[in-house]
Image (tube, rainbow, N blue to C red; front, side, top):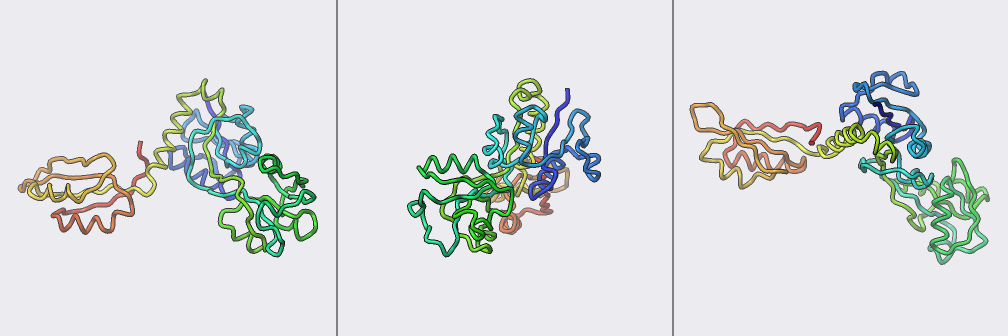
Length: 286
């Protein structure tokens, strides 16, 4: 039994998607050739490269079993898929925007004879209906920011992560339509028929996500100082303590901590009597 994972072939989420698979142990054997299908270190798992916008439909139709793509594209395609994980990157917003010099500052300023240009007609139509706005939707495949300035539309809906591109194009945000991030999704039939393999992939990726900004800290502590070390030591699931074979009564202590705790904690541990302190990166937490 084999599965295919669809990842974006290009664009801002392509490399992060490939990186997270590789960190999860699914290294791509021939990724540099960028073939349509790439084998991985697991003979039962292949990676398929596709346009991010096509991935939701590919998963819906069973062309691939698992996919990585944005919430905005999933909802725009109206695909019926299962969301397995939020991959915690690619955060963006679909917004309604108008020219800075226009009199449109809120939804109440929008008139029924206005037009809105977008690459997301489905989401835009739904948003307009929810807000009782009867506007003509002009579907574009790119350069949406230019639409108000060349007379195509009065407003636009577009994706933005920081708002910088909108400001550069003299546009202001009127409202936020959708908060989007990158998801790991699965075909519903595949999730039933290939559950074990899909869950293995999902668990490995979750392990990578859980390990982000975490460190393994290890040290030697004399028995007499152990209580002082325990008092200053945070950890995810308690401390691991083992005996050290030495002339002095000493134990080895280790724990998983947040990266932001490292600087102050190392000094606190030294003051509490810890010696030979090591701070080690973590690849995965399962």
